Structure formats: C-alpha cells, structure tokens
Length: 292
Image (cartoon, rainbow, N blue to C red):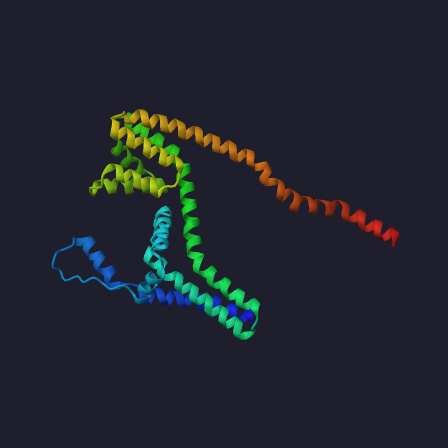
C-alpha cells in the first residue's frame, strides 16, 4: 500500500478508535451516582462506592510530570474548563494520540523504509501529542479576548447598579445573571466561591488568576484595596470604568493604525503581481512575438 493509502486508513481508523475508547472508559456508574447525589443530596452510609479510575488514566498520570499537569490545569481554567475536555480526559488522551502517531509512522516506515519517514513519524508523534494543548491554549486566548471586549460594558452596568443602591456583590450577581459572555461566568464563579465560605480576597485573587487580562487584574487589586481600607466602591468602579473606556478607545485606535501595515504585504505579494500580469501580460506577449 502507498503512504497516501495508509494516511487515508489512519484518518478513518483513528476517529473510530477514539470513539470506542471514549465509550469504553466512561465511568457510567460514577455519573449515575453524581446525578443521584445532586438530585436528592448525599446521604451518609448510602453505600455509594468510589469508582477506580481507568488503567489508561493511571498510566498517563504517571507519565505526566506534576508541573506539566499544573500548567494544563491552568490552561483549562483560562479556557473556562470546557465540559467536553476535563483534565483527566486531557491527560489520558495525549499519550493515546502520541501512540497513534507512532503507529502511523511505523506503518509508513514498513511500507518504504527511509530516514525521511522516520522524521515524519517522530513529527506525527509530537504533533498528535501536543495538539490538545494547542486547542486548549487557543480556546483560552479567544476567551480572554472576549473577556477584554466585554469588561468595559460590565463595569458600566456594575457602576449603575451600585449607584442605584445595590451592594457590590449584589451588583456582581445582577450583572452575571443577565450576562451571557465568559466574564459573567467568571463573576458568577467568584460569587459561588464566596458563598461556600472562601474569603473574599482569595476569591477575587482567583478571579484574577483565571483571567489573564491586565484590566481585570488592576480591577481586582483596586477592589481588594477598597475592601481593606474602607474606600467607597462606587468611586472605585467609576474610576475603573473610565479607565476601561479610555483603554478600549486606545486599543481601537492602535488596531486602526496597524491596519495599513498588515494590508501592505498581501497587497505586494498577492494583488500587485496579478494586476501586473493582467496589465502587462498582453504587451509582453506581443513584444515577444514581434522579436521572434
């Protein structure tokens, strides 16, 4: 079989193998127990046993360094912890994808041995191992950009709520309940942390860690200082909202000034050559015919 045929087979087989692995390793009993506990509350002595993790997950955890696992957990927190990719599934799927890439490389090498196919197999193994990291990191970047765009309007809504007589946490709850973006989710997560007994300062600092936007960090620092020294929260929100609006206008002006530079290279390498071919092509053909 040719390498292209092996590649087509791999494209078909790998998704099916991943689907079979997902169905085989899912903890159905644990999911049923969790749903039962959420519906009726956890009763002591109910006989619910803790399910052992799959063997593949245990092996993957042993192969993954602790610092690397902490970095993956931080990237998942920045990305909003998508339900389709929890940390345990991410840790388990990375070695499986790497093994699949290595098998593809071995099959390609057996069909036609050569140093180029060895390098291709290593490249496939590394690429498939780090593809989940790239997807999670990209999702985190998009989510933080959405938070950055949503932040000035959220501050304005919180300022209006506080000036109308609501407290700071009540204003956060109102904004988060009416918001549909990622910033509203983060504010709701912060309120939930406070409600379960976490200190306010730690909950606000956790919000700053989950959001890598500098404006969020400065806002959290200002709120912590206002709570510590008894400064009026309305004044803090007013100053932060004004600063956020100024930064949003400056970012828009910066992007507008960068636009001509970004358009220059596509204009030179894509539009101008085609334009010259259309304009000067017939003249060049006639000149060649005249001299020939």
